[in-house]
Length: 134
Image (tube, rainbow, N blue to C red; front, side, top):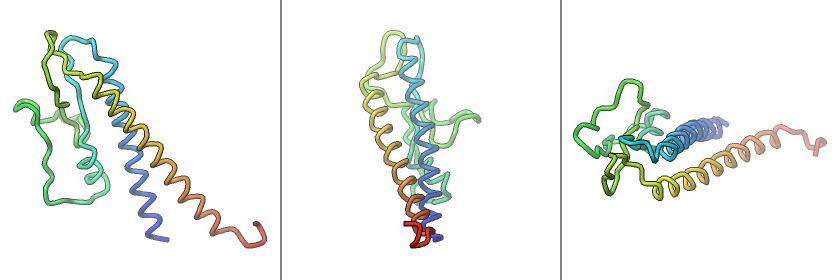
């Protein structure tokens, strides 16, 4: 039972982080035409390691520019400036194609995490039922 609880705890942390990542990408897409807007991205794997207390030997973040190496105190762990292929004239770094693809990918993973949690909880409830309850 403790192993199942740990798996659900892990998946619930992942769900929270996926929701935050979705919000972040939605913000990037909404600001695609804002001059000077710097797209943000989350280092999901590192943020999940930090949220679950799992440490790894290489907790390195990808820094896209020397000035981007230090996040502000209000930024969640793993929040970075997104890589961009080409600067625009207005200094906006949102790549709509990349953002849309990432948004869809994250949505699918969010749904999969929800299904895992629901399935696990359904299994627990089924195990607690008496044979006469069907």
